[in-house]
Length: 206
Ligand SMILES: O=C(O)CCC(=O)C(=O)O
Ligand SMILES: [Mn+2]
Image (cartoon, rainbow, N blue to C red; front, side, top):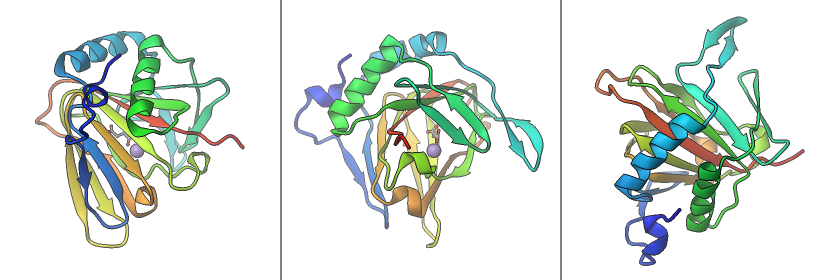
């Protein structure tokens, strides 16, 4: 897998998003349009999408999206009382991981994949701050398919940001971002088509 940014060594396409207590780098064309489209088709077939439920106040609630968890062997990830055991990397997911590592200079050992079937699917406000991600984690987020707004809000200051995540884009969140900011993908009537998001993470083994 080739990514356009890796071939273009000028680095001019990076957007460093300036916000307090955040380190956000956005690369709108990490993958070419055709490449992103092919990858979307491939991953929508290839990944083991599952409908998970979480427990909210003791009640099982279906989460509003499908997801799948991949990674190096033995990786498990727990959030909201749900533990996902990592499946072994598929060939195409592994190639994306390598491209993201090459671009970012960071190593990742797992990936949470989300499939938003349409604008009715969402992820609510949260930070990627689970203890197994360690202090100041780098989260690398690749988007494929429908464009969705990634919203961020500062936990203390009255600051908000919206990054429209287009197909083929890469958003890197690093530094103190997860301590100070929450993010979400809100439901929207505007979007009728599906989107896949891949968040590459490094899980610290206990
Ligand atoms: O779909 C996205 O862009 C965000 C997904 C996300 O925040 C997560 O999986 O933790
Ligand atoms: Mn997140």
